[in-house]
Length: 592
Image 1 (cartoon, rainbow, N blue to C red):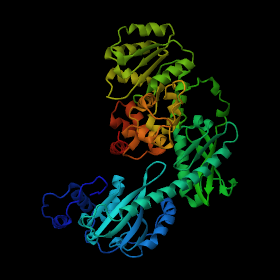
Image 2 (cartoon, rainbow, N blue to C red):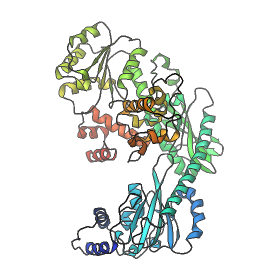
Image 3 (cartoon, one colour):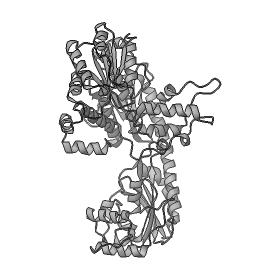
Image 4 (tube, helix red, strand yellow):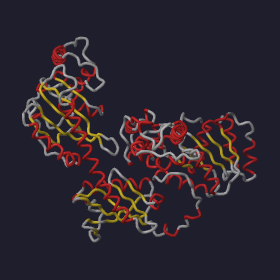
């Protein structure tokens, strides 16, 4: 059971102790035992935890940890104050492995892993799961050796994205009826100090990565990428060149450099003949015909913190006439968005049918209009199936016969007769200048599925806004209405921008546009928009963690496969080359 500032009074510990004894002996529990405590005891039994654990687990050296490196100065300043033996202070990582401990609170010396799988219910595991301060007292624990222990734990959050990096725990002798725990202030202050140290260190390493990026990008037109596992910097040339698969390879390369031997990438990937600033550089072939990346590890204070990659296109790509493609001037520089719009621009050059798919509000119609404008189709016929049945579908054939483009919005809302007419039209004119937008949802009927299959080879799926949070800062000024005369344009604090980038945006760009317009029209204060002014769901942030670029790419591939197979999970799994059970697990993991 968690005690926080808003928690009610704790249950009396004596009845709880008796209930625990009944649980351990298999007897029925009395009424009034909190459900969350019973569930925790049952989880411990499921994991095979022995309640009478007496032998300490084999101590292992703490794993290499950026958290411990940042926290050590803070913890060592506190260690002398714990010499009295009344309490102990413990730091764990995100897997609840003990990285550091001091003091001699009762019971803590027995364990080097505080996960529920090893020791059952405890405050560190509870704080990690709830992302809030948590307390566990006496019989709420599963282990016998902690029956006279009270502990409070606070999660340590990454300053740049709010991810839980570990926990700080203060344990002491049993304190009945004390809420909050007497060590709560110490745990909170320690976690805050560690987070401040992490922030200071991340800014220093970010500056080192930025400096390396700027040096490499000094040559005009250079395609340069800098990555450290948390940050990604791309020059304009790189953003237009790299596919999501190529970026995923570079992300894995950055991770390997950070954890490999002396920060150097895989032995098969580097060339010892090339070296800069004492770090070994190497060449890496990128997928999707992107070209070759010249990768150089970036060092800071003796450690590799990331990589800088200079991408050279294939020889035949260097002379390809890119200027002939229409330029899509829509806000967004992220790799998923650039990849999708570049693909759409390439397909739109031929004026053959083109299908744009994506969640509602992702910008399908805006992109379609821009494609038409860029290639000179300035007067298309626009039909919106969401506005009701099409009165005169014959006008489609007349429009296309006159070589006038047709933009058909919300193809998923077409009546079956209209879909059949469109299929017949495409049978007669497979090269018709037709653009369709389609929002996947319920499984399509046979006629609509035939239309989607016909256009599958000339379709582009637009990424959701949550898959390209790096574009939000560029979208904001485009979405804000023109300020009234004498009023400054809308600006944002860094804290507000981070909250916007972490929000999942189920309504995508449309939802973001509504928020921006509402703030511009109704706020009564001057200065940048602060986080406190944002709506509650945006201000408080998502309950789930932010996906990595690799996970985003995998999620996108799953959504695309489901779209192509009309929501049929068995066919989507077969097309992806994974078991259906694996697909279901990933759908649950990505909340799809």
